[in-house]
Image (cartoon, rainbow, N blue to C red):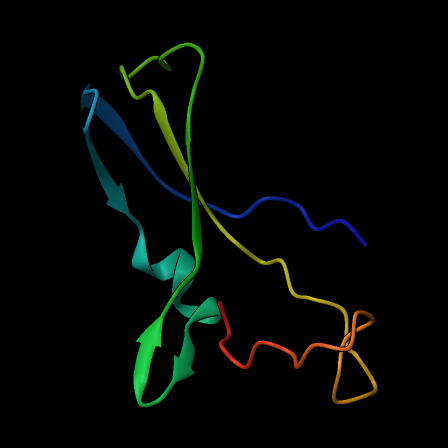
Length: 86
C-alpha cells in the first residue's frame, strides 16, 4: 500500500556540494526510530526542478518504506537478513 508523502522540511541548494534545509520536528516525531540506544529518522531529500514561491528548491520527506517481513532466517538467495534498520 502506497502511503502519502509526509513533507517535513524544505531548503535551498547553495552550490554543487551544499544544501541547506530546515526540518519541522513536530512532523517527524511519530517516525523516530531507535537502534542501539540512538534515535534517528529516515528522510528523503530531493531537488525540485523549479523553486517554489519562497525560492526553496529542496524538498524533504519522511522515508516510511519498510521491507516486507521474511518468515525464515534467510532471504530468497540464502543470505542472512541485514539486521540494521536502515
